[in-house]
Length: 191
Image (cartoon, rainbow, N blue to C red; front, side):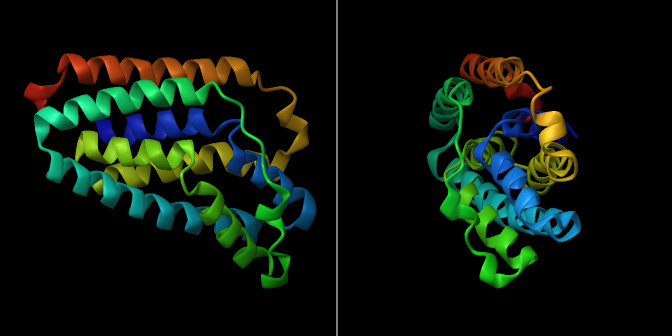
């Protein structure tokens, strides 16, 4: 349950103001069909994060616990810094409209998520918790928590959310996880 809750919280916060959330705004404005956009975000996130979690589990297995502790700790600290850097969406990521709303959303979200903060976080979380199902469920749920309101309410809520505060909270969580991992907190509990 810890893996699910931590993954949901971290990705949900990290996604606010992220380029994929900006992409959700753009798709909602462009197509004005929220249901296929939300379904496309779900499918793209599930596929992308399942792949990322599998990579995280594999890396964890290959490196061993002592090396992995340092890799994860430093990765979480790097994510804390990266979270504070604002994202911008590339207009070409949403220019696949010839495929229909659902397919356009799946393709553009999957592509935009490659190498994104939340994908890297999914790799690190899967390596940290070694519970792929809980991590993927949590990261996907976190993405949906951040993006569904973006699709349905778009600009009405975008200007009311203090992005600096949200990014700061996410950065603090990443930093806390990084420090805790480097100090070996939780090793006796199986994570």
